[in-house]
Image 1 (cartoon, rainbow, N blue to C red):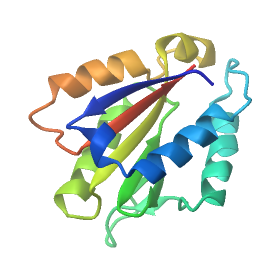
Image 2 (tube, rainbow, N blue to C red; image 1 turned 180 degrees about the vertical axis):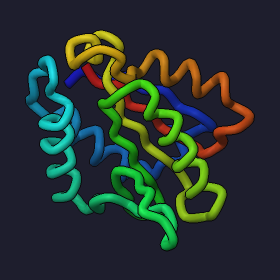
Image 3 (cartoon, rainbow, N blue to C red; image 1 turned 120 degrees about the horizontal axis):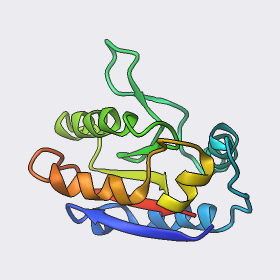
Length: 151
């Protein structure tokens, strides 16, 4: 996979280097062809590899709720989003919530590039739009976040 990166609130430096390097190694080593409708298959493929290196399954953000993020490891939350554009706002709120509650020191967000999202389907979240809107909400979303776009 070809990767691109964006650092929000110094996420590139706040994310633990060993965690970041292991994650990038998994993504770079993934041999997967982006096709129409491949979202679920792609997520399962990558998440199974992340589970093998210690990432959790769904991370419930609060004991009184069933709201979850994709995964968790060593005080880092992960969101892997390949779905509808409108879902990333909920992801940002969940990530900010766990940060404000002291449950995570940093977040990682994996997302398709604009060109990959067009292949996957219509109105699919993409790196360019996500990073633009993350900058727009800079005063509200303060969790240090490393955004990784894939193509």
